Length: 86
Length: 518
Image (cartoon, rainbow over all chains, first blue to last red; front, side, top):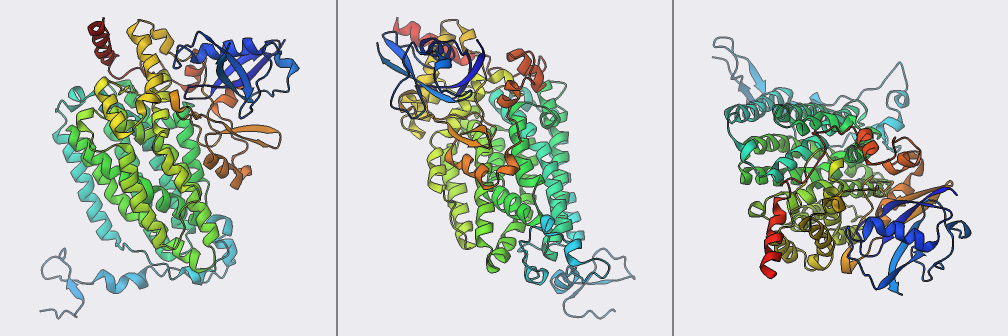
């Protein structure tokens, strides 16, 4: 377990945010942490959707249950958080 | 009767019977300011090191053709400046008892606070820069003009510290006129980073190009004209006369850069000159985007707005400055169209950041998003409601439903490693926010745009070691690592932290609309 800062570029939000997560977090947990700072704050909730995580500019999302430590994401890398169909 | 030679006039100050005659300035100016000499005790390179002159190897004699378009003598300068000072101070004294401070819209007071904090000590930086041109300018005319410019900037700093000082007992945020540059407040860091780059850590020639030509001719000269007009429109004649007094100096000493560029271009240094101009405009645009954009489109009360920030930029900055660049034989910066495209959104994004992180400011930002304001924004920026309006909708919903804590910051925005401002762009249905990263010597840098990253890449060693506020947070310099720790680090005491300019009174309009709809 280790604190791991990433940058959230959350769909429909206006600014990049510093989001502290943990290397043991799954992508869904990382997405939930990022959502806390954007959804219901400046981004309207979309309850019927899930939030997926991908590298900025990537087409593919990381698997939802992949742990941060299992990926090659670097600290302070910018991740996109995108509303997707469940 | 003293016979007076044509071209010689009687000294109007001489006492009768002791008549002295003076030549017209035009008859002695050129020879009096021909102050180049051949040094005997040191070499020319030691007296004027290239690192300080920034002459790019253009020899001294080539600089002697430098011809400043505005010429003045010391007695003329002192006489005019005395009148200007007397004018500004007498207006201030005459209106001492006016109620403009109490009666002005809180949004206007916020403009004053942000202006003074961001600009007053920047004038001292500009004074140091002018002093460098005074000593190391390669052309005698440049040194002469810069001597006056140096005194101008000193006057501007003094005025813009003295005028807000009287408001300190009424509102301690005005104390930030002096405090901002001495703090680690994020906007203070951004201003210092920019002005250190353009004014303080540059050679005389670079200063002539970057400060006087790009920053002053391109931006502040025009912006001060607009600001003085806005102040008069608002009824703040004290501030209006102050800004006019400063602007007339700016329009004179801003002319130092043009002839310097002509010398560089004539001696095969166009590429070097172009790069300096491009870097300076890129950096100046960011400061204007965050300071003047929100001031014009959000903080200025709707009834006092004459034109939108975008209209202002297009008319005064693009229209005027494009001509100045072309006339000198320069090209438009490579990013010109990208920058113009940013006029549509960048300052709206900065405004949202300013308002959302309002406790981190030394002024109280006006939201500027009443239903009427939104109609105006939609008219001036078609699509505003579908983009920025979407994000404001969520904020307004939280305020209407009594959830103000959801409008308070809980984490830091990522700031650009060049501008030191939040990396932000269009939200809502036009979402286009993007990081422009750069991996340099093992460190990952983040930029707001291709333009900011390009500036870094021109001279990475100049910028690489600076730590942004976020870098400092991650390095453990901000303790405790939370909002209160950040506010303490920024030096924001209770009573100084920003809050909504109108105390959220503007939200009532939305409450009423919802009640009416129910």
